[in-house]
Length: 255
Figure 1: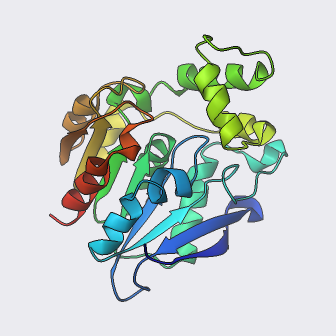
Figure 2: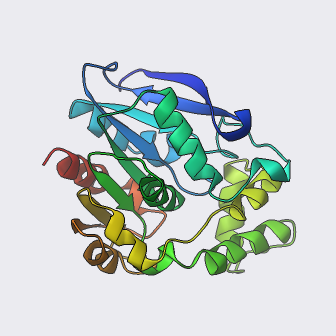
């Protein structure tokens, strides 16, 4: 496996964001920015199951931040550290700090929400991958976030068999800062379907065959002006563990 190097960049309000990098240094390979999912990390979504290495083997430098309130990044407890679209503000700050000009952008789940909203806010990647996301999911955050807020609020009393049990278990495994996570959940905004007409670069909707968490990925692909759809085995959580997940991203970015 390629060596990983970690640096810290400033996000919105000076929050320190851990940025993990693998592959050739700048100038020697195309760069791809990968944004992980809710309660996860760069390590779990991109490195552990080989997606980052597949991209490195294809010639990419892989840039993987831990999102605010996740992984090794800051998890402030002040409400002012979580204005609307703070993850978009962080993504734009990272692109500027890392001087990314010719790059691709890929997000999974919450990372996909952040990626598409970052494009609408002005980022201009060469290609865009929206993984673990469907059309309805981009515009239904209040319902989705309410489930996780409830899991945080009932964390100590959730028992096996409760619909929130898996979310609780994953938060526990990932040692999630629940105060920061709850604040972050309130900062995410919706993207209505009509806004997707402004996403003008080639875009891939990539989803597990049994992933029903965020609506229809084929419908998302159709709503994107230059969208395509790829399916891999798995549910929302298991799709990122599949070999074909990384292969689909590499195939799209190198087409």
